[in-house]
Image (cartoon, rainbow, N blue to C red; front, top):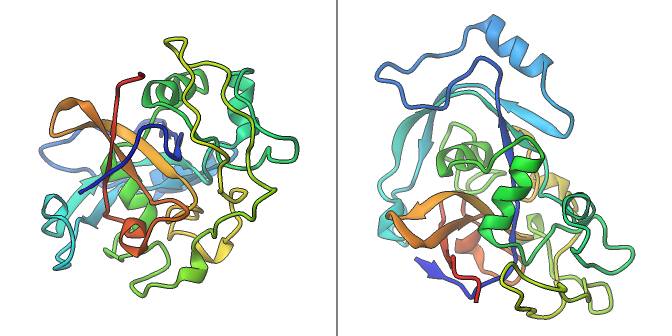
Length: 252
């Protein structure tokens, strides 16, 4: 299990519950009918993709994976919508005008975002953070692939570090407790910079670029939240669709 420093490339990635669908676990999973699936896709909100309810493969049997993501198992995940790309600086700035970034970097993913801020943004947008199962299904489809594009690692399919001089260089003016925590310029790329890495459902940047918040705490520990997707500067294992990283919840 990878443990990371606070505030390091953590971002917002949100979804919206499909009309008429339930994300609560059912004793007998209900597959959507063809008409319901067609309606789901027809009414997809702008900037999102529909993920119809179905069984999918989550986790892994890879020998070098962390034990808490083993084994690979079949899980039913009900229908939902999920954003195509990570929330950008420009999008987050509309929610929080104090969110600072340099001119020309509006399309970079919003980073240095605490979990509580991510949840507040999602609520403001009429959405919520995805569960781990929802995030993972959107990233890998139903066939249990290791990366969004397939089972073979290709470093050209993840966002590379931005060249110096093109990073976000503006420090956040404050945090919820009045303290500032700034780790320096971001090195991310604009969202969707590597379209060939698109997931089976049409989501981009689900391997690399910036870590993405999901719902819930790690093993019920309120001091540890879960991140998915890897980020620039992290290795191949962090970009696997089943990989989990941890982030503390303290804001000091």
